[in-house]
Image (cartoon, rainbow, N blue to C red):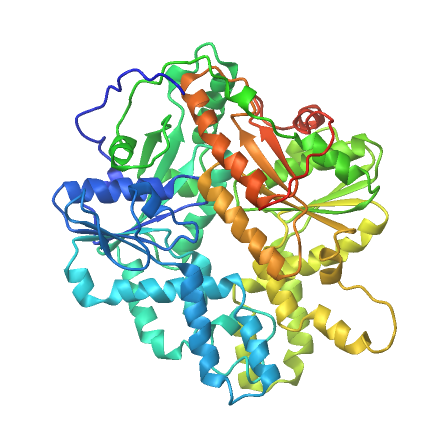
Length: 610
């Protein structure tokens, strides 16, 4: 353990602009691992200790609000005895989704044919249902007059995404659309049966868009990729009326940590460069900066310290976290992949975990070993031309344009399914095709056209389709089921894209995460989604690890120690194979640095999850 010097704390938290004249509702949103739960909890504590009556609500599937406060909260309003005036509630999205499924399916079971009921159950098995069900739960909080009257502020950890709100704003008739056979594989299945709640949802969306009642706080890190993600979220939510937005840049490395540590100096320089080039959509927002802390934000004392301006670093001990880390490198995974000579390699994970860089490193390493490789991405923020400066001749690079693919998919559906519909049916189909899920399906179909190349070369895919999309495609009778129905009894051999993804001899799915609690929980949830779609992930990659570096910065070394339990958890409970990739001094651009990122060659490590 590190020996800490006394902390020099300010007497009160630093003035945060997002807390100036706070409205009734405060929503914190951001990608996994940026610290939105910690900041939401610290905000709730500060408001309550200022004499306000506060309800803290989490709708995050990876919620650890109860763990932060050291008590069991769950799906009920629970007073926090140590903070008078503060109560908390954790909405369990999975439990909400199951109750939602039961409510909808219960209405048709025994009324509709078994095959139709089974189809509805499959439609409700994906991530859309979970998202809608969670929204269904907390809209009641926004519109419950007595609950609102009992609290001065309601603080939400994880705001509704633009994806969810756009779904709820679709104006057409949700109920009966799927049963009438007028729709395709989209998100309208999970929306079935919501007609009775439409007035409540409209009131909730109106509250979200009311600047006098609601403030949205975007939480991000001082990293180019994370800031681009935050900018897209800002534009998406502003487009649907949520314009009262603030920005919090969390975890900025204090300049005092840069002395005598090249890694700390490099991190500091990258953060300053990222903030200097902040996207215009974020630059205009009121902004607060929160310094990186050496401690895990667990417990009331840590929450009170999170929003302070500065504190001294822990003293440096002799303990080296790198010596305690016994984990394989990315090179060990590449050895296992290269042994097959060809195949499809798909990198999946939440935004901001480094999928694009790791996909490029894998592709360059395989090409460096002499294999023909095709690297493709659908990430609009991916700058592969910069990352892959000086690519070898046997590496082809492409980018799938989501907008172009979505438009192509829409035209195809309208020209096939739409041609047989009357005016009302065609109007509903066009509305269906405006749902956010349409883009995911269109991109997956574009990926599917490339999959066939994997029989002769390596195809490395960045930003692979989510488990949600895979479930939709498989569960709604899309290409896979139709081919099976038509050809299954003929004796002819055939292989659909879904069958290839489910075949571990042809496809290796790599889940990318960070060595922090929320990204690990989100990666585990993605793995569960994939398994429900019949896809078993081949390995996990733990990216940007400080524990895998030789940092001497006291603050970074303490954070490196904090990573070790998460890495051990992945090895013991989640991943059959895994690799740990260190945080680099330099930006991972150019083949030399990407080859360095690929790691050393050593026998592949395989564990058996418990």
